[in-house]
Structure formats: C-alpha cells, structure tokens
Image 1 (cartoon, rainbow, N blue to C red):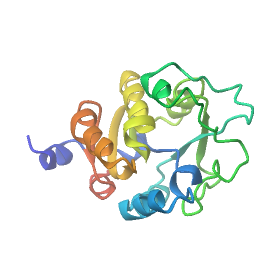
Image 2 (cartoon, helix red, strand yellow):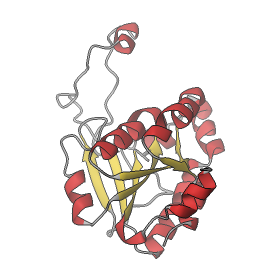
Image 3 (spheres, rainbow, N blue to C red):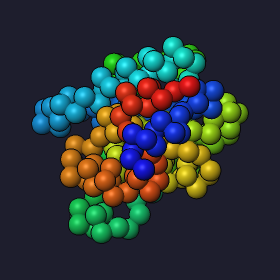
Image 4 (tube, rainbow, N blue to C red):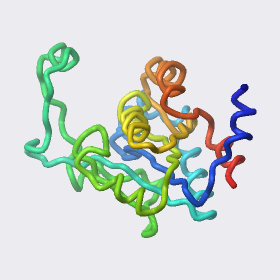
Length: 208
C-alpha cells in the first residue's frame, strides 16, 4: 500500500486528535547564533507550525505546547553519564531557566488561553507530568506531532505515545534539527515504525 493510499484509507478524526509541539522556544528557534538560526529559517518549521496551529484552532483541535524550564541552580537537572557527556569533558550544559528569554515561546507561535502548556522535567514529557491525563481528558487518541528536535524530544514523545496506545502522526515539515543528517535519519529509519509520517498539509487534507 502506498503512503497516499494509506492516508486516504485512515483519515484523522478532528474529534479525537491533538496537536503536540515540542520546545518551540527561543532557545531553539531564536538563539542569536546566526548559522543556527539561518538553518531554522530555511527549514520553514516556524511558518508551517503557525499555519498548522491556526487551522487546528479553527476546527477545534486542541493545541499542546511542550516546554522546558529549569532552576538556575540546576538542582532539577540530572547529568547522566553518557559517551557524549564524557566526550564533552563532563561539562554540564547551561539550563533553560524559568523566566529567561531562552525559555520563552517563540513570538511567531503565541500561546492562547485555550491551549494546553506542559512543562517537562525530562526529555520525554510523559515523564513527571500530567500530559497523558490531559490528553485522555480531552478524548485524544491521535497525536499530530512536531517540534524540536526530531531525533531527541520529538522522537521521545513518539516512542512514549505509541507505548501508551496513542496513534502518532509525525508532521515532518513541523519538526526539525539543525543537525540535518540526524533529522533525516530519524524521519527515514525511526519514525515510520512509531508513526505515520507526512506533512502538515497532507494531514490537514485527511481530517474528517
């Protein structure tokens, strides 16, 4: 079965879907590093996500923003012993501090009062939050997923959502990592086993 045939055969029901966007914050989208920010602009993730959210609100699909906010003293951060951490000289990364510019939602993607905001203590927002309870309470069984970054936070959400019996639709134009190779690897090799992969435009076309 081709992807196009599969999309038509399995439409997305507006009454049981939610948009979930991960870490759409200044610390990822407007960092002040011109090379990084230029890649973000070129990807179109902000524009595609803004259009998606606008359409979702128009048809009554809830929007859930996942964000990270930490204490400045890092007592709520755990630096697990990994090869990457060791290779970096065991130097902890500066936290995304509550109330800082970095922790703020990107201005192009404003949070409305009707939206849901979940502050995650770990990479996977199902850990230590009420995300699952909120989704169940809204009657959601299908997550339309995007955000930063594809192979870290977004992939973590997809894995946990699948294990919790949610259907996942990965919106590839609304997800990105400036490490484009890692982004593409996840889209090609990981996400097809966790989700249906399509653009936000394709997803909106099969809403019913």
